[in-house]
Image 1: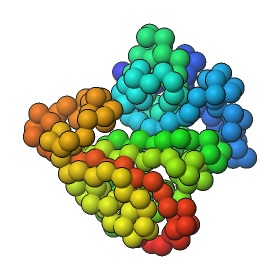
Image 2: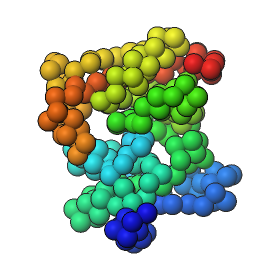
Image 3: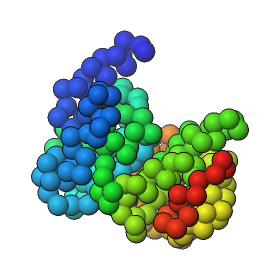
Image 4: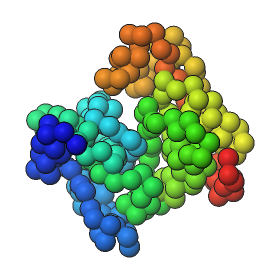
Length: 231
């Protein structure tokens, strides 16, 4: 890690909305599990996650658009989240938090029905066959999400990768999940909601290079989500 990244990473620990628990603190369930709204955000508002939040641009952007919700960005790269932490603190945005952990650990952090919505924005495509299970829309990950979300929760996927997009569509079809919206070219579609209002740094670059942005949203089918195969 370069000196600048180290400096940013160190600064994240000075922000009161940045959380990095040890394994011992989460192995039996993190202390805020089931209590995020009441004890951390001090309200009863819905909680929405951004998984693989990177710099937190989406997390902060959504929090600004919707002060009636609470937003938590999750990523393993602490230096990336520095920008989201810094921006939300400078702008005094109180409905934002960032958690540094592996996404595989989310069941240690949140209780069933605690999460109302999930955003997955520009995830790593994991192109190799041996890493398919690491795709954030794989059946293995959807099962983890199901264990923390409300039954009607919406999951969003926004990506420049046609590989991960097509894969996700196949998973949705195979497990009979409920596809709500799907487009191969978001900014030339009829979709006019939050998904087009926030553009990350890399998303802007993709658009400048005329790379289409794929987008879909769906609900998990509770009757099939636990029938996880190797797909």
